[in-house]
Image (cartoon, rainbow, N blue to C red):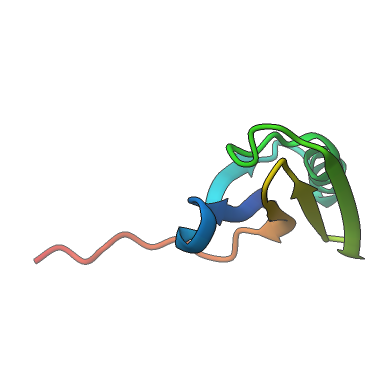
Length: 96
């Protein structure tokens, strides 16, 4: 059984203190096609913390599993990336 996720990476912070971080991870109950559908919707409609006021939204499809959305606000432009990803492995930290 595949374990699919949708990841959102975005600019966190303001002006010269922006950092690129994973802001959300959505677990998908279905398969890759369902994950792609969710990712598409997030690319079109996700409301990041910044900018507060959206003046323009431009969405690029990089490939079937990745979108890049740029949002222009009143004074600055922010972007986020939505990616479909298959959980490959998960390990716990070794006990000491």
